[in-house]
Amino acid sequence: MNLNEFLNSNWGLIDIGAYLHGAEVNGLNIKERRNKKGLELFQHFEIIPRWDNLPNCPRCNGQLRKYVDRSRTVGWGLRCAANHRFQPTKNTFLERNPVREEEPLWFPAGRFAPECLDKQWVGPPTIPGHVPFRDHTQNIERCWRDLKSLIGPSTKENVVYLYLGEWMYRKNVLNRIDTFAGQMERFMHDIRRAYPGLGRRPMQLDIRDCDCHECEP
Image (tube, rainbow, N blue to C red; front, top):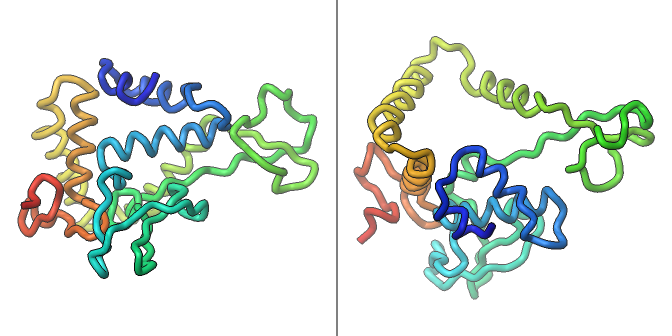
């Protein structure tokens, strides 16, 4: 299933995982295929710049072009004729919330059957004589660890505002949309407003001083 077919279907949360792990992108391993299709999804919603709609250079206003750079998070960067270079995720949601891959657990070779080993790991083992194993609770534990470090003491005033803001957004915006696909599309739309990308002012105090895609002249 390609991106347009997926978006035109009545998709739900489980379908996102099925789409990202689809087999349409030949010649790529699981991780590369998942990343490629995920980036296509982000570009569709303009969470990161689309290649056919790149912004101008914030420094010289020259035309930005894509160039391959494997050291970048998305595998490419942006630069103008004056060689000003920028990360495509600059001033986007991905800059504020970078995607991180959790490393598998390592055990001595021979302890687990081959079908139990991590199929996502590519390259030599980080510990000689060991094999990768990924427990299904690892990502949950990592998310909980990151969440605890982000929140800190629950008595902080800003944490209260975060909880109230999330509850109000769910109740007043998302819960008024009947389908998961519609809720997800609205959420992506609002992310784009809050993190509009390179050379744009992010949304402040609702739409005041906003320079997002929706409010631009």
